[in-house]
Image 1 (cartoon, rainbow, N blue to C red):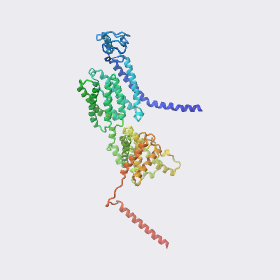
Image 2: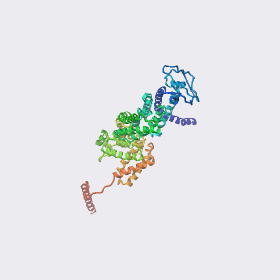
Image 3: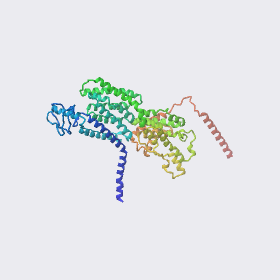
Image 4: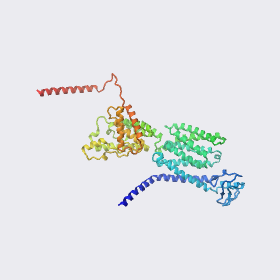
Length: 573
């Protein structure tokens, strides 16, 4: 018996490892395919490079004392272009000896002839690229990114990297690119891909992509430090420029700034490395064109990529936040109470997310759509009722199924509209698995054995800070409408109680909100709601529209009291 228990306990870590490995399998496969593609490009690079034993030919010259011994690994017969013969096993140059003209011609032949492939340089490239894949796995992990990296993010980053790496390798083989390292930079689409990654996935992913692509370019350029620094500086600059974009037209201005920064960066690197300025005008023009067209092409590619990848980009979210879209107009007409509630929740959630540094735009859009499942049966929700409550006429269990269904319907509508996943998560998680206390208490009156599970939502507790903030905003906005005399102290106490209740119910355990952030959220809610429920001075000539009816009611009451007193006196007689 003890042995079986031990086996079960030991099986848990193994099963957990299997689950984790299964989750990472798509990324591992993607990385493997990327490595194979890079290996092919690296082989092309090495086979067309002027290297011997992984060292560049320009490191040697006639009359130089050799710092290493190079041995030929194959026979190379003489040709019309290179008549020198190289024998297998021959020491072409010897360490400590002067390089003769004949030895240099043999080195030149080995570097240029296609029959000779520097497999040592190829092996060095493979090791370097393998380490780069490991670094990619580390940087694009949940720990550093802050969320689970989706497969589409991995695939897009790999495709973009391969495009940058291949463009550098193939451009380097062109004759006109041999003069200056900045000629190579003209044809690198790194800034374009960085713009796209910032807009589609966020600044952090773009920063990591910049580092990975710069290291890849270091290998593709035969470890030219100038190209590495240029890619790193301009890439980080593009990240900072693109992070502030709020609409598509701003990409044009970002393109102009990037063009200018490309030229300035190249000029500074030329000064630092003391390079000559021959042909600098053409290079500066080419780098400016590269930066400008990076922004313009990003403007063209971003819309189809948003649709294909279905990402929560700032442009997509801005489009979804337009209240004139069909679903919001339908909500206004058929469920006006829900519409106004959603606007208020959006205001609370957006400002609270700004206070804690979360994505305020995701929270605002999620709050707009979080209750759209109420549109079909809007009359069953209290904010859309005027006097009559339909739940008074039906069984609490039926009421629960109607109320609970709005979450499922909202998710179905969101999927049909192809809303981004973070917005769908907010819709599905804004009630978590909380209990509908009102209907549960009503059910207990007729059935003391009623189960809590039957009166709970079927969702999961929020898994992101934005989702957690929307849940709190939804609860607070709805509850504060019932608060009598909502002064600041009463609001503070009431909102603190509501947030405390969500914590004790375990609704905030998965959304990574800290106690400090919850305090900031509470203060933001109090500040906004205190302004919303502020008192007004009564004007001298202001009249109560219900005053005539109240006077009639008072007259009726006084008459009925008079009749009752007369009847009492008559009975006393």
